[in-house]
Length: 172
Image (cartoon, rainbow, N blue to C red; front, side, top):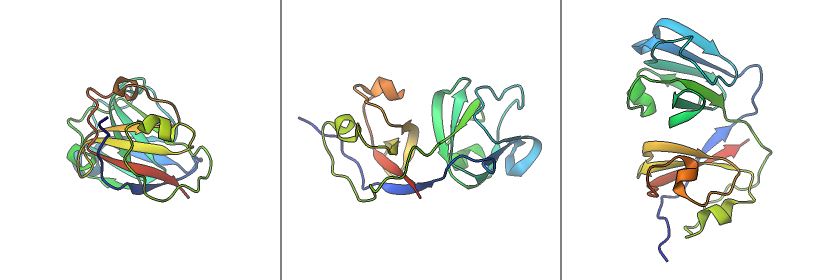
């Protein structure tokens, strides 16, 4: 049976959500124009911003969505500055909801993982997060997989079962 081929995982550090967790959305490139600061999950950003062309993640790790209520294409951002939507691999300037990637519990899983045809079963009981990328070298659409059992690619909102590369979201 065919397995899913992917590169060795890269680790993304993850922090506990706290009052210090913050992300700032800007309507224009290079941190210009109207802005909105957020420190918690937000299912609907359009009442705060008409578009999003740059982002500053001051702390925490975030999942951004192109549609309200945590739907549509996902973008996983870590601490840093994103001068325009291409810098977070966005397809356009539509960011309509966001949420913090919360720490479930510390995990000792820090080594690489071998390819298996039944990836969801292999990960089912682990308290870790994974980011699947559509293409190799961490490019293309991103999908955050949290602790759950995924029987079909549609359950993680993918349009097809192809996974080009993955990253492990690591607690510290």
